[in-house]
Image (cartoon, rainbow over all chains, first blue to last red; front, top):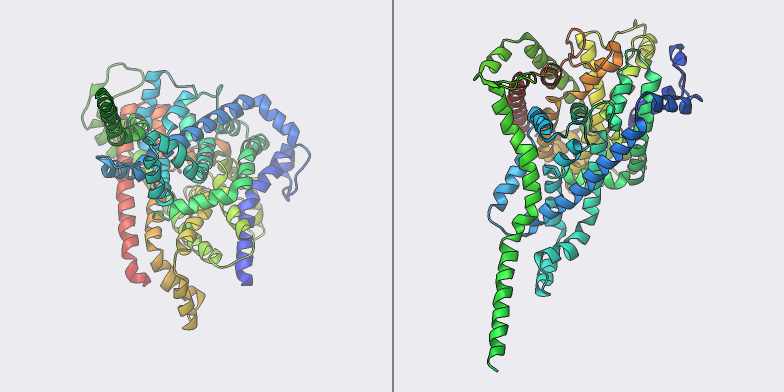
Length: 267
Length: 319
């Protein structure tokens, strides 16, 4: 029993230490890193370093872009996934089974496979360098639809829909008055998961955006890839770019974990 | 006087048509936004990749000559391509195998009434919330040759300063560490979810029979959660075959300068996905890159399929 707690405490340490240490480095001066032993406590240079981040890259614009992109993607994914999930879980129509199967099957196709044509498509639409290129392809995805289908087929009682029909509700009325209230907790979890992955998305933004109009992750990679190795600058940016999300996670961690574990039982 | 029932009947009829439309047709309207977006940005690019891969397609020329399988033939003779295949498999094995064993063990530890359960779970997921960019920036510092914390700790045991990014084996270890740090806790939570669905009575009976914790893990837990193990192995394999952000950023933030698509000066950690990126977005040879994407897809299907079969057959060894 004691061994169990010791192991778990070690896990907490290894999970948290790299994040803690990044704050230590971010709050020091570059010269402090060359000391032996290395500094293990935060210094007083954090805000000076952060303002250096804002001088080096357009970090304010990056934060604004990331908030707008991740926010609009999350809202769209929540709404469109609930809409499609409702139809897949509770409505009868031709081709329903086949469509659902295709949806699930494509979740296993590597996203990298389509990256070149997707880029060519963005060039054609003249969306490269703009946030459209990030938002529009991400408005809905197979995982979200599958997640909401799973949840609604379990959590939405058929009698509730029958009762609505008897009262003269149209399908849209049912969706608005019956389905949405039931779907709210799962949609919230889906929204948080989507926000986090949109905020952290790096590769696609790197491909379609330019350094002068970046998201947070693209700006961070610009900071980290200078010709002079400025760890302090990179980690100060990382601290500012990661902090908002860690805050969200600390607040809603329990629900997010519940969502991940629920979604996982599908296996 | 007789016109009233007629109007009612007509209204009823009209309502009936509208009702039929609502029930039969409206479901398609609900899935339409998903399907349209999905076809445009999901399925179309997949098919178009195959089309592009059969052409001599670069950014500079407007003419895209049809070249048949020429891109594939060149690829199969390209030493850099095979180097990328080797690196992908090596980093994939190094990061996935220990990660899954560790994740199962952690889930096993958490699958008991414990104090601070939420604290443990949240901290397991903390690395997963951290962005790839942050992970690589942080770990590049930790793995630094001169002032890195890891070399400092190793020096207590008499090790010299390791230049992690320089060697093939050492850079693979460093990259695998980053991947493991980010994903072990996430997978542990998925295993934990599966373990909680195993009936308690099985463990109670086993305890009465005097089976140790490890025996219970081997004889009860693992066989019972096998579907989840298969699922996680396949998903992790697909993920491991596509690793790109870590090596891309690692060469940048470990001092090579610029975003490095070559995966180190000797391509010692260029993965398949990074090879595709280098061909497509630094050399702008889209045809060649598309062909490489398709070969990568074939490799993903092959490796994931083999792992699927292996994990499913493991039953004999476990039960």
